[in-house]
Image (spheres, rainbow, N blue to C red):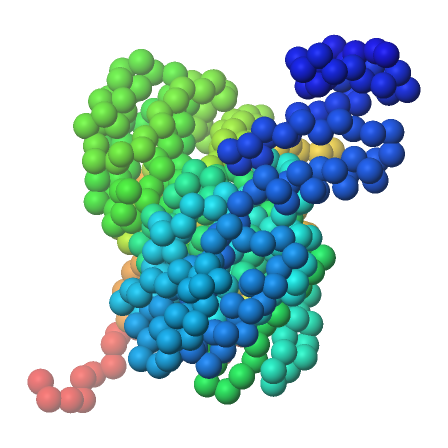
Length: 586
């Protein structure tokens, strides 16, 4: 007989049979809940899996919480299915939430079979589950609505999947019964997909430790329509994973069903008002921009501080500036601030001219790639709002951008101008890119990072590296890659962001005919356009083409919206004609 050096049987003085390899690979120690089970791996993997499954079924205690609100007529069927499980639960608790039917009487008939009863007055399924969690003690919980049922082997097939301690949730497909017999099939676990849409029903098995560590039941109640989804997202955000079991839950379809219809608005459906976001600010050391733009905005922005993880990435290379930022971070009312220093390029790089400067453009883009690659690696929330240090958006920008999110959207940008060229730092799309007072966000092909809300799942695996032949600008290239993966980019034109050194977003007042003629008279070449996004007149003295100030795309937008466009000849009249006499009341 040989002994495995790490065999758990060795401490009991029991040898391993010689035909086993005598190495650590033949044995494993499984920690499950409050028990420690020693499983000897046989040469046959199927035998080992059977022993492991049996150990898990006997080791994990299960608490089943049945939630009922006026479902007394279905409660007996639900309890019968629970008590018929081939692996018996440790405890069964009926949580009666404000029922005025016979729920209490039905539950009383099962007291002798070990079923307990708890009356609450929440009128909210999320709070009812929390009460059930607090009133039970099992290692695994199952929250079952009283109008649904479980197949006999639901626990037996689901519990072995908790062998991996990373697994916090075991979910299943839904087999409908009653007025429908449809089988609703759900995908295998994908954390990025769960971030965008829910595919885990409330009848999933979840470990008590996952709920405790994630504090998933400590959050505000919010809307019932997204209570399940938010709970599962919080568990996954805490580092747990989910697994799908082969046996479906039985989901009843019936008249008068309490269907918690999902709101049409994604913001409400996903419960984004309760979301914790990362506010990421790259700092380049511009003291004036910090004092006049960024610091007042950080002090006044309206997203709850308790739901904000502020990250200040200091690439200023200045000890004095860093000390100033550190002092502000210490004195601010943000409870979660991370300020770090990082070398990403040369000092003063952010303020060097970039137009027609190939070397400067590449250096700036490489610096930004380093900044945002680290942001993507260290991101710990589902959403990140990037505000560059020389931008000042509206104070309520976080909520307004979140309200433009949906399942397919990777990023939503506010509207701001390029500091050097004056054009808007957004591109593509079927609608004009320019300010509006209200309205839904429009779809675009990409934008800058000056004021941008990004979804974490769009950043998974992103390094921002540039491949040969790829777009030189990091933001354009990233937008292209995310759209190639099926995501969308949006622009909220009502969110107008001030960019330090750039001209204001709002167009100047419409010029009168006389003012237009006066401007034209001073230019050897002028182009008159009534486009509200560019003003009335753009001209270049000396006969230069006006394309630099008035790109053709803008004029095409004007034509598409039937706005009058006039091209003035090279030689304009030396002086404007006298205005027509006023014919109205003096």
